[in-house]
Length: 121
Image (cartoon, rainbow, N blue to C red; front, top):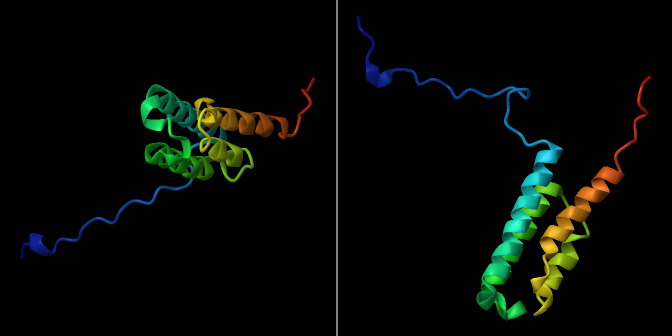
């Protein structure tokens, strides 16, 4: 008796073990965060007429809220993101690439805080 294809068992999705799962390492997260920060700051500089109003610009607010959420997701909570977010609300100050500077400062601090290993002879 032939099996009815209508009731054929569908294969269960494969769950990848941790060694085969796709996850960004720490340095990859910093690279992604820096790339996104440069893109966001570049976009705000390239489209100055849309973002010139400072706090009254809904396009700038949307980009800043998305950037704050993405950077928090990628790098965690850091105090550097607060002045970057607040500085974007002030006209003129928003021309400074604050997101890029914040990510660079977080990366610098993370490298400084790594335990130093002595070279083996």
